[in-house]
Image (cartoon, rainbow, N blue to C red; front, side, top):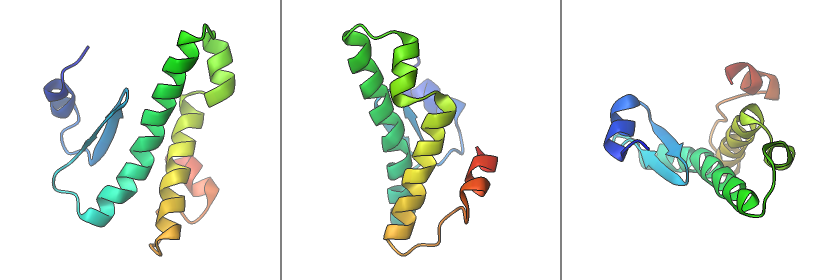
Length: 105
């Protein structure tokens, strides 16, 4: 397992990321940006926790994927949470359409 230092070094310049259920945020983020990134990365951390819970219940990889989706689905959901946050707080959404979001992913 990678240490936080190794992870941080590997993603130098990244604004935020989640590793398992731990979230990392670049200290240079502005407060409003931090909350945007939090909504996105928290989605990944939640997916990880759900996956672990399902594994403990004996669910197979295919059963878990049917419940939380594949990596593509999880990234789509995380960006949707981020865009929903932006809209709910009066910010300009990073994507105008779902198609723009999907193309980005």
